[in-house]
Structures are given as structure tokens and as C-alpha cells.
Length: 288
Length: 192
Image (cartoon, rainbow over all chains, first blue to last red; front, side, top):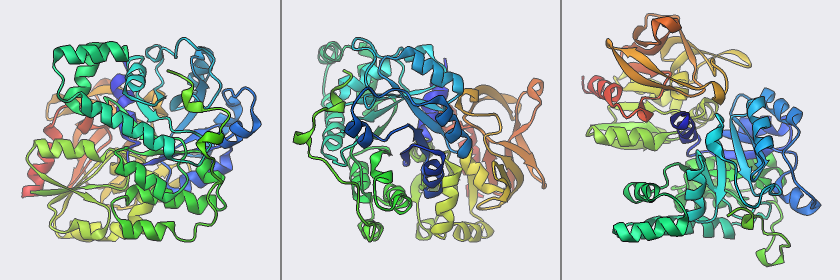
């Protein structure tokens, strides 16, 4: 029922940067740098990765404090399939819920039925099938997963390119071909037809997972992303306020290499990155 | 006819689609040089804090104001409308608007957060227009503005579509409604 309001709200994030923040002070830094929304969470993904253990929804008190600290929209994460965490976040009035593989999944069979909520959801995806299953469950926005907390864009690149390629592959398909795809993706034929006709996902699509520099953000826009989530990349850099502002401006000026060069200058040390083959847990493999 | 869309952040492409459907040529505006040859400019929905900051930083605020004196028409939607208002009321109190071209006080997020976003017909030129309000501002006219659209009388009839010379502002999102009527009206004003 609130589909138009919720997918329409996601349109307003486009061409912007959504930043992970862990306290009101960071939220204010993000807002002052030009974030179009913040994601309130207790630990950024790189710390979750380092600490191990079960990662859960953040303390509602901390989320409320962030909501009170800034005037821009505030998002917060729930575990995959955790209906109660989602109800709690809806009750405290967050603007968007991220059903996120960065937290430890609560249900290995089903994601949250997002049509049962008034609050909008964003969900992760590695490919078109995963994205469409989430849209079919009521997601108002998709973010490609990448590999959170690594400062390495290789998976983010893989996922956004996969989604784009698979949308292109629908182009020449006839009725039978589309039906086969709908079966393969486990979604209604009408949804696949909608994507074929529009040549894009029916909801706004951002990238996430590993973006650490202005050049990374510009790369994502070059690959057709509509905006970026930046997690550990900002508050694990040596100068968060300056890095945040440079990444926002890289999304504005992604077609302008001279400006990108200026924005990349003198930022100090970016977050320390990780190689994929050294990872114990691949967060992107959570969810299906 | 060349119409610009401010491209600092927000629902830029949604307006471009409507403008192209109506036969206009669209230009994304990020820096003052992008304003050259434009007959009109749309300030899209998005986050007004982001757009206000980079309007100033990139020198677009004074460049747009100068072009308005020369007859540029401007249409602001939601966050874009906030940029146009002379006064903006937010959590930090009342500040002056980034462009200050419309005699209106805007109250940011006046209806609440996303859960308070709503759909409701706008009373526009005597017929209902699909109104989509997303974390919408409220307008309080403080100058001689013309009210073109209002909320229904039962909801207080407050103004949601305002015009002052070549400046048009909506607190709802016509670009998401599937009805091109308000964009068409804006393009008419760009021609004259």
C-alpha cells in the first residue's frame, strides 16, 4: 500500500552517499559532509569482522540518539529474517531498514516479508535473481552487496556488473525465454517482464561493500550505480570529515576526471584494506 | 528548449524523464557554466542540506540568482523548494534559504519522518492532482505569492504549490505521480 511512497523515497537518495555512523558525533560529521542519509549501527563492518561473534540489531537508544542528532534520514540494520528486530526499528520510527548480511542471519530459510511493514526496506543482492527475490518480497531499494568491511571494491564491482549484465541479457528474450528466467530467479514472470521493458531494476539500486576512496565511488557511478553506501571507508580513514566530503563530491563529479584528481589529493591514509582470499567469512554469501 | 536539472544530489533522472516526454532538452547542472542557454531550471527532491552546501561551495547560488534576474524560470520540488524559500525552519532554528527567491518560510520535515509520508489529492486548478508527500516541508507564505495548489479543505487547505513570477515550488512530488500537468505548466512559463 505504501509502495509508491517507499520506492519514491528511495528515489530521493539517488546520486548521493549513505554513510555508516556509530554515534551522534559521527552522524553530525556525515551530515556536514553532505551525506544524503546515515546508517546507524554499533560497529562498522570492519570491526564486526575483527570482533567476530553474533552481530545483532543496534541498541534502540543509540539509534534514537542519532535520529535526534541529524535532520537527514536515518537507516538501521536488522538481521536477515529477524521479524522482531524489524518491528522494533519500525516502532522507533527509523526512516529505512536495511535487512543486512553484515549482521548474523536469524533465518536461513526466509527473508523478512517486507510487505507486512509500513517502513521501507533496502536489501543486499549479488545478482539479478537475488535482487528480484528481494523486490518481490517488498524491498523498496536494492544495494549490491560487495564485501563489507574490507576496503576492497573487487566484489562490489563484480556484483554491480553482474546485475547490469543480467538485465541486458533479458533484452532479446521471447516469452518462453523470460519464463525460463522467472523460474530460474524464482520470481513472477510479470516482474521479469517489467525489468526487460524498463532495462533497469524496478527500484533504486546503490552499491555497497568495500568503497574507501573518492575514486572507488566514481568507479561505481561509472558502472551504473545510482549512489553509494560507504561503511568502514569513512570512519576508519585517517581524516573522516575530509574523506566523507571528498567521496560525496566524487559522486557529484564522477564524469569529471580533473575534479576527481583534486578530490583525491592529500586525503591521508585510507582505511587499511583486506584481500578476498584471506577472509574467514564472506558476508556476501549470507542470504540467497 | 533547454531545461536544466540541478544535479548535486536527488531524483535528477525522474525529472529528466518527464521533461523529455514533454519535448524539452535536458542538461544536468553541477557548476555555473552549465547554466548557459537554459530557459528553465528544476531543483529536484533529495536532501536539501546536501544541495544547499554544494550550491554555495560551487558558486551556483549567486549564478542562479543572477540568471533569475535575466528571466530564468525555476521549479523547486520538496527539498528543491526549500532551497527557493527565503526562510527555512529546521532543528537549528530559522536560517535563510540557499537561493531565497520565494517569499515563503519552509518548515523542514514538518509532517514527520518517513512513516508519516502520505498520498493525498492536491486541489490544483479545480481538479485533483495525485499528491505524493515524502518527508515533506510545510510552506508559510510571507510575501506576495500566488497559491496554485492546496491540501483538501478538510485537512486545513494549506498551500502546497506556490508561484511568484517565474518561481514555482511544490512540497509534493509531481515527477513520481505519472501526471505531467505541473511540469507542462512550468515549461509554458519558461517559453514566455
